[in-house]
Amino acid sequence: MTQGQWIRRVVKPAVFVGALVPFVMLGGDIATGGLAADPIEDITHRTGLTAITLLMATLAVTPLRRLLRLNALIQLRRMLGLFAFFYVSLHFSTYVMDQTLFSGQGLSPALIAEDVAKRPYVTVGFTALLLLVPLAVTSTTGWVKRLGAQRWQRLHRLVYVAAALAVLHFLWLVKADVRRPVIYGLVLVGLLGFRLVSERLRARARAAVGPSRSGAAVSVVRAPVSEEMAGRSPDSR
Amino acid sequence: MLIKRPADIRSSDITDEAFYLNRRAFLATAAGAAGAVVAAGALGRPLRAATPAAGQNDDELTPYDKVTSYNNFYEFGTDKGDPKAHAHTLRPRPWTVSVEGEVHQPTTFGIDDLWQRFPPEERVYRLRCVEAWSMVIPWLGFPLKALLDAVRPTSAAQYVEFTTLLDAEQMPGQKRQVLPWPYVEGLRLDEAMHPLTMLALGLYGKPLPNQNGAPVRLVVPWKYGFKSIKSIVRVRLTRTQPRNTWNVVAPREYGFYANVNPTVDHPRWSQARERRIGDLFKRPTLMFNGYAEQVAGLYRGMDLRRNY
Image (cartoon, chains in turn cyan, yellow):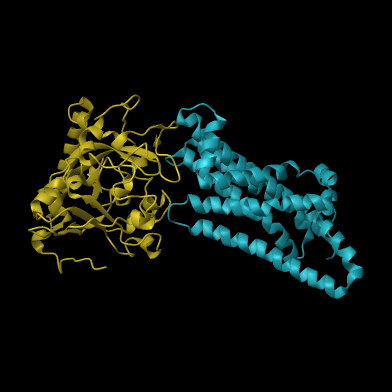
């Protein structure tokens, strides 16, 4: 098996199952009454924590791929991103129910709008959700082709903003113990910092090689997308 | 910080075990009897449904396992389940509470002195957390006023300050500076002397579980839960308003008074409703947690929006 096949046939299904574990456990706890004393709070916290964790995992794909020289890892990125979005959706739905039906009110968008506008931590969380919607929609291969790889990639850099807002959302909602949101913040700084540094190094390498290779550099940037689309094994870069 | 403890425990302070066990048996019987009386509706009613509002008459007791497994007690960790998981390191006996400051008779009470001198009674109170959840708990305790009367406050006493144990060995959460330790709280003297204000020694007819603030804690049912300080080692009467921990940490969010008030939101969430633990649907929060009839007079003329 090539590395690409190994990741496609073994790692990817394993990650798929792993990403479902929090959902299955939540379902189990709901069915058996195993939730905390405030079940809605428990669901909200667990889906939120899983979502932000998977968001970080999504952002870890590129650094890992470069550090491990294991380009085929790219095959995990879309799946992880969509799972993050899945948990964000559960998290948001729980919040909506709590604000409306469970508060003895109708399912009114106005109530949600009011809360989103009034409470900064909700505002940033909701903004993160909004930013993730177009990314989930355009996650298909068809949309990559339609937008063109470069534009698609530029659009999907919104995930950096969404992740930062998610950390801020977490930080602003805790009462006093900021340890967990700070850890997520540091992880995010690391993941984004890696990109900055590695881009700079690559730019320097390109400059050193000379202008004739710059065209090749662009195609290198595109490569991950086309690999993912075709499921091809990685080049030797 | 210095916590004064007696150099040694005098033999006269040690409760004979037979008496101790007997007292437990007595309490269990008494609690059972009190429970029966409550069920008969003779005792609990004035305290339970002081100002019943629509849909508020169903103050069922929150089950024991929920009361003892869903706690905010940062001395043992910041998750709700942490106190139950980690509070076994607390040693609630021997224990002393020093009552000092602006009093004529500063006194250090051993925990067994408290049980003996102030025979506890069962009181069912609503507990409203500042995080918009609530419980209904059958406490076992006595009015704080009885303790204060015993030490005779001076005419200069205006406030009462309470301090939790400071001991990172017993309270491992104190190894991290999540809050400035030890936890402190305060009441105005008239709030402290109010008949609803109690020192609890137990719940559900038994001594307090560690995670609920063993061996002695404050219960002020018309204020947000964080006022009801746990595991108290010192009560000090003062001339000036004491500091209270959450107000020090986040003054915009937590005031000194912290009266339950559905019309004044926490900056980050609404206080208009609350989830009674065990319920799916939230219920409206009542002014002064439903004890307005008894306590509103304490705040006449005060701007409760400013004095949150």
